[in-house]
Amino acid sequence: MKDKEIERIIKLEEKRQKGVVNLIASENYVSRDVLRALGSVFTNKYAEGYPGARYYGGNEIVDKIENLVKTRALKLFGLSSKNWNVNAQPYSGSPANLAVYLALVPLGQNPPAGRARIMGMSLSMGGHLTHGHKVSVTGKLWNWIHFGVNKKTELLDYGEIRKMARREKPKLIVAGFTAYSRVIDFKKLRKICDEVKAIFMVDMSHFAGLVAGGAYPSPFPYADIITTTTHKTLRGPRAAIIFSKKEFSQAVDKAVFPGLQGGPHVNQIAAIAVCLKEAMSPAFKKYAKQIVKNARALARELQKRGWRIISGGTDSHLFLVDTWARGLSGKTAQELLEAEKIIVNKNTIPFDNRSPFDPSGIRIGTAAVTTQGMKEKDMLKIAERIDKILSK
Ligand code: DSN
Image 1 (cartoon, rainbow, N blue to C red):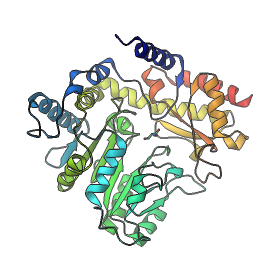
Image 2: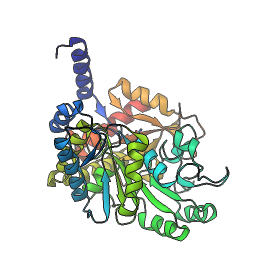
Image 3: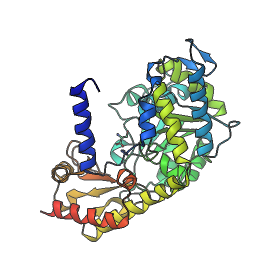
Image 4: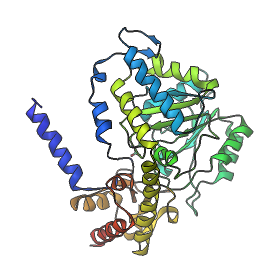
């Protein structure tokens, strides 16, 4: 690079990434091909519109890449273009979710305050900011009602969710998590949606790679709309995709562009295409299964050493540790581990009495370390290190 200052900083980050054990559940390490596509000349191109219907000239090659990403996305998840549409233009997960709400719960048609129109899992129980948290624009523009987990089991309580849905009659029900470690029963949620005539959306950002690799149940047989970021377990660029059933796809496309965004980031779209192809390989299936094996091994090993794991274990790539049960706040635990080059994030646990800035737990994920080739035996060593550091 000519810009030595930036080159030096990039190298520093490369070194940092290589020198730590990365247990951030939403991060991963992309392939050289993904990086190559991200750094390609597609970053120079404006392509407002969709393939075959652009507002700028010179888009014949961009059309090829955008059409290819759609074909690959459908193929990866075993979907037919007769029933499903793919929009790969959202800049990332938050605008993808916002676009879906704009498309399906049009503003101006909200009922008076007090009646919920969208139902989702609260952030503090494991949902996401864009599932209607009050500080997010999604929570400011729409009326939400939130469900959490059962206090005793720390699992989703479908009976409670059903009761809430029957009472509130939401237009849309959103499932998906950033900090819930268990399988979601999509079939049960579909039934609830049918009963109250709600549209069913799944935000599979965290577990998309696991679904692609057959290591977590697929929401596709049940959901109407599925959003996903592409940079977590799917191991692609920071970007997002919206899958919508044909009846919703026109509204979703319009909400993304021109409703919410301008020109798509074509370099990101090219990089999504790369990661989708990578995720079709047998090696990726093995990878996805190994992520879950690793998460289970790490959770089990920490449990053996006396650490309380929320809900008692994991079915996915992540889990929460209740560090406060041993008198250590999440922030302190994060800092102690970071000082020893183990990177995690502090996280609220269900029914947390502490502040989100210094909550009761930490979140641990295994997607990144599994990319580095780690297996169960390595998890045992990591658990030993974590235990030693936090027990000091
Ligand atoms: N903030 C991300 C996470 O870490 O889970 C989700 O967007």
